[in-house]
Length: 368
Image (cartoon, rainbow, N blue to C red):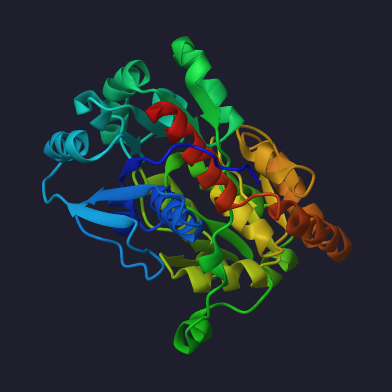
């Protein structure tokens, strides 16, 4: 654990995602706020800018919500104007645009550069916005927080001037996933032994190839291990939905579920499968590992940084590679047990407290 010895500051945070985004960036912002609130009072004060507050009982008097009910991009101008008056440094957690209007130092979290890779078929709106704003944020910000070395490398490759100002801050495991499961929700979950998939249904999650690999498995394996899919619908979902629906009763799509239900699915699954074509970090992989799940994921992008030697890897572009790895795990109780034990150990190396410490140290340097 890093020891924080920075000056006392008033820190502004773009906290919109805490209440507006169920997973992904929303989880990052919520856990950052929780981790900051869990620290001993070191004199810092936090102004949380949002459209609506996130109800969290652990937040104390050091935190104050400033609510701005305005659409983008107007929200960014109004939030920056308020932060310029109230704060000494600002954390942009969910946009690159706010820095354009800030006169105080800012730190920007960079999650990935997927929108710069047409092969990922990113969301069109996000692509336009991020391509227009990331370069300006790199020029104006005091520092960039990358959530993995893979993201840092991609950022620096596109914007070499960011090299000296880029800091890697790996994400952590969400304690809320250990919450109690509601009885009715528990009864609605499938029995143990399935192959689990978690993530927004979008092209880069690579589910058509996973379905093709799964369909090539021995029918007895498919019968014993149905495919269970958790995640909201994203964009360009046609090929993904067609592939999943082709499995008929062998596939169960649950949509968005509670954190407690997700934790239970991680514990119940035979294999957690995440064959993504590209990730900034791959938080579901870490969450599955923390629950002791046997994980099969991609051998590219940031995912080996998370999985280490505790997961099974496959080439996400190769259906045969995914099929072989999945079959290898499903037929071997021993292999699954070994990886489960390794996963639990490795997951303990990641914490939101460490992420918050690096974030705070970066903000301190920026505001000094």
